[in-house]
Image (tube, rainbow, N blue to C red):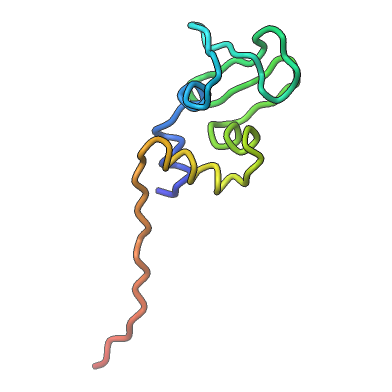
Length: 99
């Protein structure tokens, strides 16, 4: 699994929004942080988000990337660090067997 797959399987957009200080209602609505929103217009689903005001949408990595102005890889790494997700890189073996 890549870091993107691992993070998306363990962190929902709602979890990230709450972690980053946004106030989420019981039904998953929040004031969109991507435009001047006076009333909640962003819906946080289990696997994605959608703003009915500015049409912003994506997954938890896109949300974090846009929120902090960082690349998707940096967002995935931030989420992994913030939520204590251990990501393991597979070792690359490059050796030659002699006969």
